[in-house]
Image 1 (cartoon, rainbow, N blue to C red):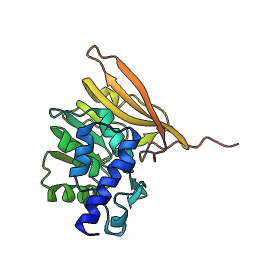
Image 2 (cartoon, rainbow, N blue to C red):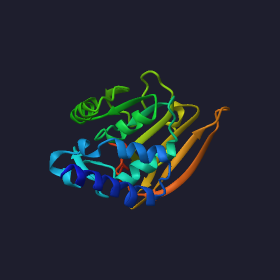
Image 3 (cartoon, rainbow, N blue to C red):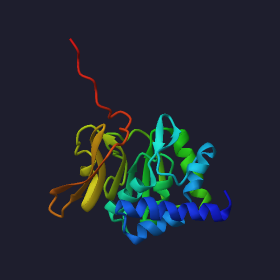
Length: 221
């Protein structure tokens, strides 16, 4: 694709996919326009970098479609001073976007090769305010700092688990997807200053489960 083709495709992604899905936060739209999504897509799928599809990234994992990435970031209402935890680095594109919107991002990825790719891509763009960690964070992440202004969980859970909300600072926001295919619910959980939690259902979707948090089959007699 030529430079003009790329910019046209990027604009179409925002105006025809992201904005119509009720992503109206101008900071989110601006960062999705500024961070080159095509740099976070494997070469075989570069022509589909701006398409409204889930793109394979390896290990049977996929890159979320742009509209979902936008809705997630909008729901988290990221501020310049926020410290963010991302559960599931994946391609690294949401990581780079959130790092641009916030003060610092701690991101955890189970697969070390995906983490290395994402880190290399972000570094090439001069994004340095990210701490990259390899590990299993499907049931939380106990390493310091331990509490965050915002948490993005990029895979679904079959049932709600409060382990992630416990890592929020007072006033912190958690984006998480709960349920089973074909219908799941994206939720925003907010921790109040008196340590109560408000849980709001945002929209319906279908998202692959976090590795290790898949629904376990019952016994058959």
